[in-house]
Length: 419
Ligand code: UD1
Image 1 (cartoon, protein in one colour):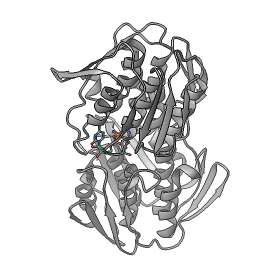
Image 2 (tube, helix red, strand yellow; image 1 turned 30 degrees about the vertical axis):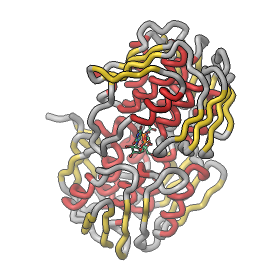
Image 3 (cartoon, protein in one colour; image 1 turned 120 degrees about the vertical axis):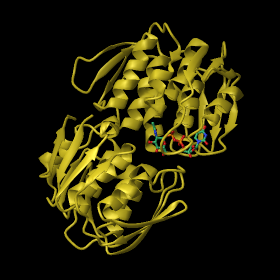
Image 4 (cartoon, protein in one colour; image 1 turned 90 degrees about the horizontal axis):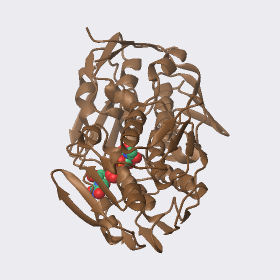
């Protein structure tokens, strides 16, 4: 297993380009299942989760070709196996995104239940209930969701909880259903808007994506198209936090301020200077950082996927920052690791109180999930001495060449293979 070794204390400076969004790429790759014509995607990030999704689609019979870097053409003219097996689903929960499109296109689907997840229970009941409302017969046997619907029909569905992949799954199922589907209490994340735009380019009729009511008028067929995946707002936020925490000066290119306003506001509140010019953001962290309270919630509020990275920065801010996690039950595992580096953090229920400013000191730490890994990278960048981060396969799921991008910004960071 690879590790990252970071020598802390270097200010980040220079320019970095943001890759395509993981959480937009995964549903949009699954959208290829909805058409018999080729779908060409560009700005596809080179991440392990994307590789896993492509392997899953391959196994179903989707042919794929990459003629340009960062692009892939998917041809689902023939789907041999409408099946997502446990072996792949257990490594990536987003495999559940195949359920809606498979059912819509093939009339049947068999998708393994995701099983336990480190950051919380993460059930899929809303995906199942929504598809049932559209006429699907679903049973759960031998750890699999077995779904059948010769033809889905439009329905009105109100989500009990705001779910991102749940909204995406039902949206993809509804585009080929008979009649109109209305999804209420839908998630409003920018990745949902990106998926709707791709589906729209394929001929789907969707309105309201980005609001909590999405209306989809089913069509008999979708066509192929060429579509560029949006930039990754969480990667952007991670570089903004890393630059601020190291008192750096970094120009982040290919970003979207609209998708990241809550994070930019909090970083400014904490003392970072952020100037926006089109799709470029310059972040400067030259003054002293101040404590800021953060509460995660569905978009447009502060994203849970930035909570851990913000916590690393908060260790360097003067005063007490209260960081409250409201989306997942168990997303504070990075706290123990930050404490190993000398952070002063107390957890009470779903809130962490971070008292700063602390000088972190390098140590061996372990990555426990994707965003916790990014938190530890930022902590390593500001800690005195050497930090070694173990189990960075989590990081490779969601960040493209992070050590190369950080090295180019002046960080001392290297990947070492296990002995
Ligand atoms: C997506 C993102 C993930 C992000 C999360 C929250 C992708 C591939 N992943 O995950 O990076 O952290 O949104 O912004 O886009 N829930 C239920 N029943 C359901 C579905 C969800 O109770 O059927 C609950 C979950 O347990 C959780 C909350 O709803 O507490 C939000 O989860 P959800 O939005 O579904 O997260 P994901 O879509 O899995």
